[in-house]
Image 1 (tube, rainbow, N blue to C red):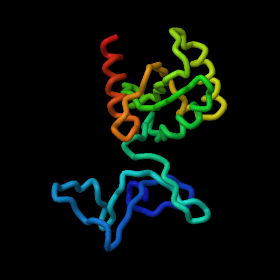
Image 2: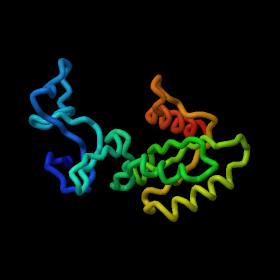
Image 3: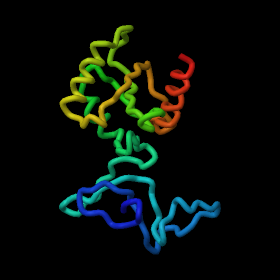
Image 4: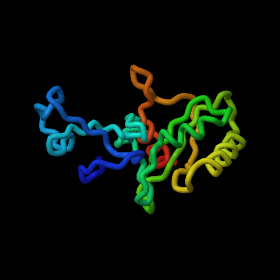
Amino acid sequence: MNDDGEKLPKNEVGQIAVRGKNVITHYLDPQPEAFFKDWLLTGDLGLIDDSGYLHIVGRSKEMIIRGGENINPLAVEDCLSQVRFVKEIAVVGLPDKIYGEIVAAIIVPNFPTKDHRHIQVLLNQMAKEELLPVERPTKYFFVSELPKNATGKIQRTLLAKRITEQLKEA
């Protein structure tokens, strides 16, 4: 559904909402943002394809909003991870006074090096060929590892916080 609770047409991304006899209708601790009328809002973003299949494409909290445009960080990661020098990548939104957020790519390179300019050139080239201008990272950061939780999932919120703090200190 969209932000107004309306069902979206096929192939349009919106928030996944569920309801039914086996779906909770409230939490013990009030969380009204988790519900819309009799729907449970999962926090996941998805779309229904032409065959009627649901595709999960990301999390609503992970969306980057740059100048009013919603950017799915997973789509940017999928594109940029094709560069052979990239071992791991995470794309996050960082605060920006003009656009609200900017797109930042945090990269773990395949090999240790102090000079990452050649990797950044390849990343910019790939972004220019495959991504819309608003989706292209405006900042790149190179790290030795990405913070992960116990299940191995990248902790994007923690990563964005760390990078933001580094930028303030610089």
